[in-house]
Length: 271
Length: 314
Image (tube, rainbow over all chains, first blue to last red; front, side):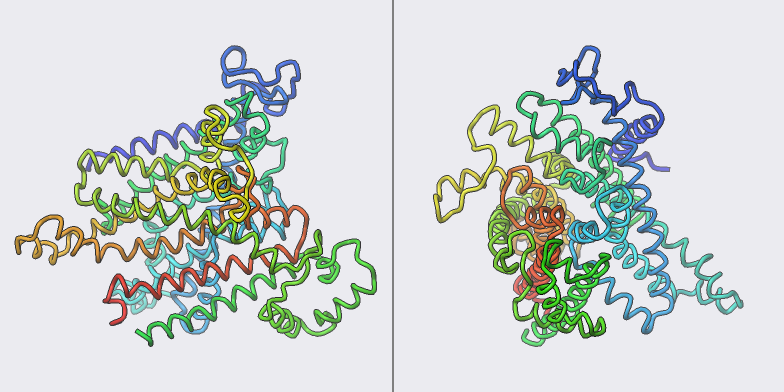
């Protein structure tokens, strides 16, 4: 057993803190994140409010924690949906080949050729801007890249001896796929899902920043940054903390993703 | 070379066709009569009936697509509901605003990041490498809309060196225009530096392990010659492809930067149209960015053999 790489430790620690904050934020925050208190508008950090208050006198720390819960939940559900959908498409096309493969992959590649955030914006125009619209839009936008990776892995696996052997032994195709092909897709999928968590979190924040995400007053890091713009001259902290949360989370994901890739993809080791 | 070019151009055609289908279907997914979606709630019955006729809404969906696609090919993307302007000139006008910022940022980032990545790979695991990779990873992790906000806070509000928000056209006042786009360009530039340094370093590392590099070193070539004449040439390919992808992604994601600095670009047009439910403009923006993305990547691929002669041989 090698010692874990320093970037894995740092990345893991950051993500650990974010996950704990999100779990805690889902059930408890120091103050109700939606409670308006005009007497305590735009209080600087320190004192009764550790990270200050916003333009409605709402506690920034509580809002950051509640936002973490929302963002982490949206990102997890979206990644799970994209990975499930993409894996099914990838297994089908890689295993059946022929026309199913050609037609599905032609669509898949055309969608891949669309920048993810743009596809999500287009889909949001149809679904409407809310929590479920975001999950649906981002989930659909990120499915094609999963399908691509799974299909590639399946194509290289299906000709291998152990898959052939399973078939010769009289196992059904479905059993062979589930027992022998799918487990070999898990390593590349783990690497992809980790980076995808970061992309989805970033896209969700960007959409919320644009006003196309989770609608206020429910806090997200993106919409907190958006509303901070009008007060940034008097209340710098409103523009600092939410951005810091997004950046640190993404940094943690990137470090963890690099470490995972080093570990699971031997070709990239040391790169 | 010519055969490669023709094959690559032909490959872009089905992609564009599927994208057109996707954009067409997307807007048709919205519940309601397409003609009243395209004209808005306030349209009079006569013009509604006229548009229904022109869109062929009484015919089947395939015919409707053919009619619509024919119009698109002739450059007719319909009229904006909110302003009544034709969509194509509006999209083009906004596109040049965004494109200028994106191209300047990516060009400068490439010129600095690519050599920086090569040097980091050459001195792998040194303090310099660690510093470059660390900086790149941090830059990569900061979302552009926060980076922009921080720059705005520092250079616009605290130091008061640069104008805070807005946009001045280059034809009106070149000096002021430059001052106004400095911060948006810097925001994108810093972010893309992170992406490109890591890519350039990774592909150089892969090449540096190959036998021909050992051979070149054994021949007694200087490190400089090994690095730039032998390693760099083969390592640049993946980074060059990435530059194409980055350009396309930026055009899609520039809406946030344009929001921070209130720049009237294409991203902002798309977002405003989504808010206003201006479907002809939404459709036009999506189609146009998809088209630009495909064309940029086509040009990137066509230029690939210039850097890597092995590609044409395939």
